[in-house]
Image (tube, rainbow, N blue to C red):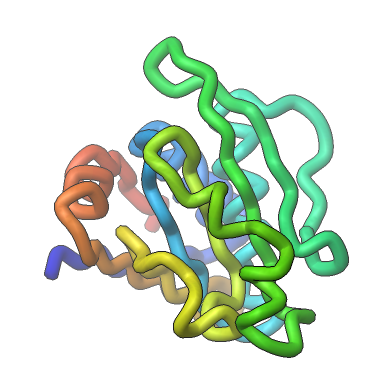
Length: 161
């Protein structure tokens, strides 16, 4: 399993990692974000989306469960679906909402709180674990598929020390 670990000293580091991830994306990727409340899952996603060309606000989908965004990857429009499953009471809610159809080779799906959809969510290509550490964050990215490994291979991120 390919892995990437980094300590981000501040919000600028989180934004830089989000930008690096944006440039490494490919359609079909499924990324799970793990971490406590306030660990930076939405902040990382917001930075990724803005770096990928989304103009405008990126709101946490805590109440809507999913927010779609259109970005350009290699001259093709790609949808990024940002899921926040924190408020789901059961995995069946995910199925009932019809969200599974978004997980395909055309979209990028980013899922916060994936453990709430355990058993019904498609497998991830990448796990991202975020943990508050001092004034910053510790981040661990794990590739779980060939596509996830290729994404991490494309990742060009050098943290400011």
